[in-house]
Length: 130
Image (cartoon, rainbow, N blue to C red; front, side, top):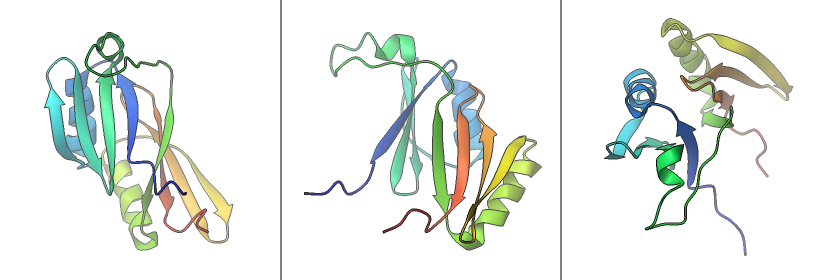
């Protein structure tokens, strides 16, 4: 038995409209689901990024309650030839790049923050593959 991939990742945010403006409006992620005052969901390649209001999702009755706080981290993988255009896009949007890191073997990544201070990373495809 083997896990195929992480299908969805969840971030807990303070303002859904602000998150929608960032992930959909600025980064261009497709909006795939939204419930006002609860959550907004985005397509991120073959994965889904869930943004929940923590105080609402921790009171869930339909599904198991869940919530969190703090500055979480997740990484988005892009094709090697798309790395530089993504870095340029983030810079042109006025989003500060905190660091670029050379992982060796020709792999780079860069880090930046979303409006809730979650640490986001864009990494070149092929890193950590079997």
